[in-house]
Length: 87
Image (cartoon, rainbow, N blue to C red; front, side, top):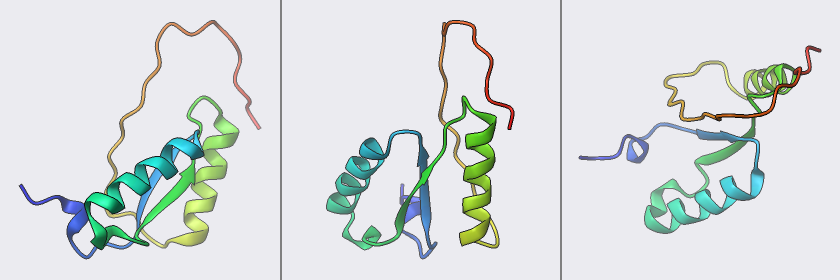
């Protein structure tokens, strides 16, 4: 199969709470697929924080006018009970 990311879509955002992991993934992907150079962008997103989620949405909307696709792959299990930030 032909990866969707190799089409002319610009840009491709990788959202995460850990910048170092995203930057490592971007380096690996651009090595494997040189045509992705400059097209992969980091977006800080911490789904455990409503404030962080809102900040990520605002940052995205400040950069882009539309979102053509979304692949969500995140999850956590068995975390201790705590209240999240609301504002």
